[in-house]
Length: 148
Length: 148
Image (tube, rainbow over all chains, first blue to last red; front, side):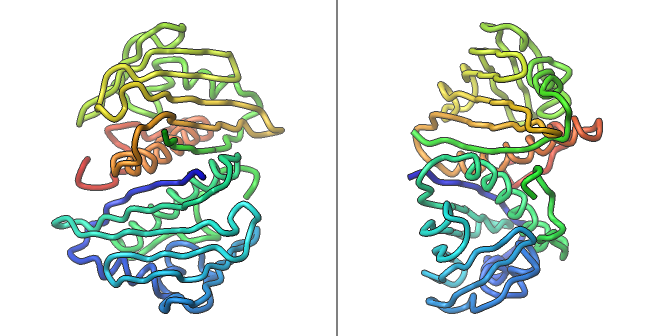
């Protein structure tokens, strides 16, 4: 198993805003993809993320307010099925720190490399959303190559 | 051992430009850090990359024109010493594809998460340099948190 790892700091005085952006449809639609539906605020909820080229359904596995969000992929590209996406949140003085992990890839395929870079693009969108009020969710995010 | 993986496509008709941006001081200074010195164009050369907060020395381990660049870290933060940085390049129609790996981290520490996101920032700078003529090398790149 191999993992995608990222970390961003967001200049905020409390972790509540990051937690909100990860657990509300308006928040998720503000940094990842505007076409976000379902239930993101309860354990067991199903969130449907859609992009021009396809999408993912996530089951909400764990929610700890201000501390942690964990999803499991239940529909989407074959490489994503069964993988887990984890956000660990902590406050360090004037910064909310987000440790991100996309866990349990079976092989380090090219698509995993692509998704790693793309997650960075979207986490910078999350940072921008919360620091400036404007993120760059799909379909308007930075494109990486001909796959998009 | 754990690895950082990324992939970007750059709209170019030949892999030579990417190879040049990875093996010349002017190229490296155009996307990673303006303070780049040493010998980047020969196997066994030592490249010195400097940033406001410190730097890295790399030994050039392998060079295959238009196909591959491999460095080994010989000086820098403890977590980086002995790790390897690999760029595999290939042409796919109108795109030069760069598969990036920062290999052989001993532990998935917070600093590895940070460096993963930061590598994405710099690979997008490489893409911008070659597609538009302007990258955003350090010290003017996107900052992620209070560490910078």
